Image (cartoon, rainbow, N blue to C red; front, side):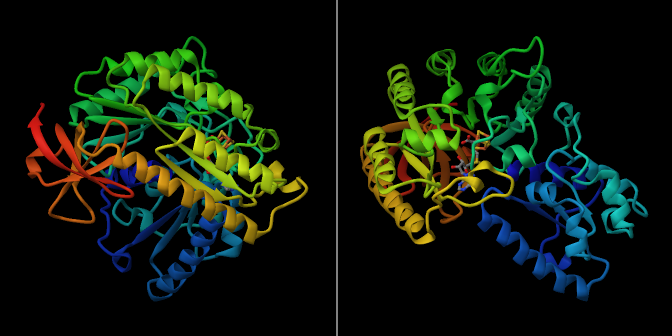
Length: 441
Ligand code: SAM
Ligand code: SF4
């Protein structure tokens, strides 16, 4: 979501005639699009800001903007602590960049022009959340040419006890179906083949707008758009994953065979403390139902280790969940204290060492499960959507299966953007290597 927000910010600069600088030292404006989901991300931002301070000493005309969730949380206080910051805007105010550029001295200098920062901040900073933001279609400078992100909703109402998102991205707002379809049709005309619908809890799409459909309705509408070959959506909340959506995953061929369904913990006690709204048994039932409907579906998840109150026994339940469910991949994190969240006040916080030890056990177990699952794909043939040249080896192309597995293979650049058949020759830990079979246009 943060990466896609950067595409929106870049789009506004681009439309105003500014270009991406090749190197940091050549830039007239630097935007730090921050994440505050865990403390580590926040620390990264502060050290990056320190680097920019010395750059600004050498080049006093350099303008520094802070965007994203830290901007939203800290607002004007960032100017006091870091007087060399020129502009602050939150994730619901990305369109305020247009104003920042316009109110500067002249187009080109735009974001480089002198401005009274504190004054500007009061007018269009993170502190002034923009309720109409969800109905805007902003210009975008997308990174790829084959796959595109599309925001379908903003914010979250769930208030999981550890999570800062409802405080930074605000309450849930869904974009109207027609706006989303309009954007997807434009993407199809530009040649994009795959879209990923984005939201913090996509399963509750549509709940806050009158006379609108739910996520399944939206998916059906997008499915009708010619040229779009694959549709993905993240992130799904287990509590809101409906049978209706599971049926759609079975029945709509363009919907990819992959679901990211964050479990967070395998212990009911911890799930309750987290305010997740499901038990392990309920979660498992949904996975079974999903696998019955789409037998080859890949399932991935998020796990938090060392949430307050997590005992060794609770942790073993999460290990057990991994062994039972056998995910295709996981993202696992140590619990990190976040401002304003309810978990701060919970008793029995877990020490760092225990959190780390549990995290490495989780990652170790998953490594072997992922590898075993990848090995089982050797010799099989898959449709791969070719995305481009591999970042790690310029002699190979890279693409993905419908199940979201990365596949590298030797091919020619003309294959980029096409769906082609690939036979898997070798499984690696985090990717697959294959050979091209026949072209299916
Ligand atoms: N909306 C999604 C959901 O409900 O799972 C994802 C939200 S968050 C951007 C992505 C993941 O970060 C979460 O699933 C959770 O595992 C992790 N996360 C969020 N807050 C955290 C915290 N305070 N400490 C550690 N991990 C956290
Ligand atoms: Fe955070 Fe929970 Fe909302 Fe996901 S569902 S964004 S974890 S509050």
